Structures are given as structure tokens and as C-alpha cells.
Image 1 (cartoon, rainbow, N blue to C red):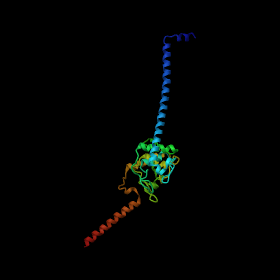
Image 2: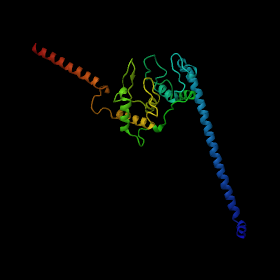
Image 3: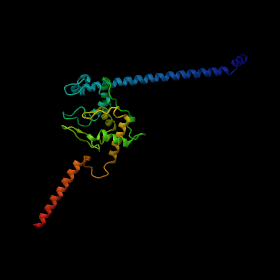
Image 4: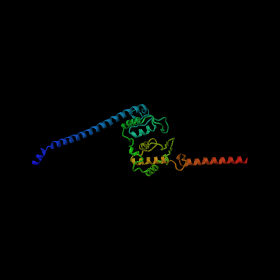
Length: 268
């Protein structure tokens, strides 16, 4: 007790207590500031989301409600969009498929009528109406990320996609004027969203069917064959033996006819 009493009277004890008090006060202030900044950031994000939803509703009512109905509950010319999610809207609007240019077997790709910001606002509004697939995260779109398996992506593509899109992803014909489009030049985000949402005639490949990593592998495979081109020569649309046979038949017939004309001209 005597030693403690002596230390308490030490001339540096007051300075030590002052420093300790400053450290505690500074720590509490730092924690409070971090909490306030987090709350402020959350409030700003929430306000931005509400603003995006409000702007998206205006855009939807002006450009989409004539087909899909007010509140996106469906109409005589368009389906109910409640629950389709942001990914479906981003895919359809960003690729120019919606709004449709004309009625037909399926929506055609064309330049988008909306900016990226407006597309995000439309997606935010539709997503606010009901839960659905979200726009994919960047980590699942990076085809150069560690762990990407291009060979596995090729196997998955041939098993699940090649019967419609062709083994070379060049596209193919379906029934009643419909077709599976070429996947060359398509942004990774839109390929992922198409697998997520199953637009038009395409089946839905949910995360239960193809995990996000599997979808990334498929995209990596598609970008690989797109970059490699056709080392074998003329692609002929990569449409397989029908196009190749037609080319050989036409070229061969032209050679035979030309040879016959040359022979007859020589004999005369």
C-alpha cells in the first residue's frame, strides 16, 4: 500500500493519467465517427436507391407500361414483370431487345434506347416490385480470374447449350421463325444474365443447375473460341455440315459447268 501511495504521488503520474484519458477519448471518438460514417453511407445508399426506383418508375410508365401495364403487372401485349428481377431487365433493355421494334417471333437485338444509368433505374424499379435474379457481380464475369476452368466451361457448353447455339456458338435455327442467336461479341454480363433468366426460348439455368463459377467457366470458354477465330480456314458461318456441303456442291457444280462450256467452245 505504501508503494502504491508513493507511485500515486510521482510527478509523472498526472501526465500518464492525462495521456491515458486522451487515448480513451480518442478511441471512443474514432468508433463513434466510424459508426456515424457507416450510418451516413447507408442513408445515402438508401436515398440513392429510392431515387433510382422513382426515376425508373417514371421511365417505365412512359416507355413500358403500354405493354406491361401499370405496376408491371402485365397487359394485353406484355407479360407480368413482377419477380423477374433486375438481371432480366438489364439483359432485355441493355441489348435493345426491349422495347421491341416490331411484333415478331422473338425480340431482336438493336441499339439500346436507354443509357446505362436509365437501364439501371428501370432494373431497380422492377426489382423493387418482387424478388428476382440480380445483376451478376463482377467476380463472376472476370474470365481471367484465378480458378477459371476453360476446359470445364467447354464441356458444360456442349452439354447444355450447343444443341441450340451450335458447337461454335454461332447460333442456330429453331421452330416457327425463332432462332438461338450467335454468342460472339456478346458482353459477359449479358451471357450470364441470359443463363440466369432464360429469355424468350432459352431455358433458365439457375444456381442449382449451374453454379456461378460454372457460368463463369462457360463465359471464359466462349471468349476463348471467339478470340481464337477459325484456325482451320473459312468458317462458312460455323453452321456445320449443311453449310459445308452446300458450298462444296455449289462450287463443284460451277466447276463442272465451266469445264463443259470450255470443252464445247474448243470443239466448235
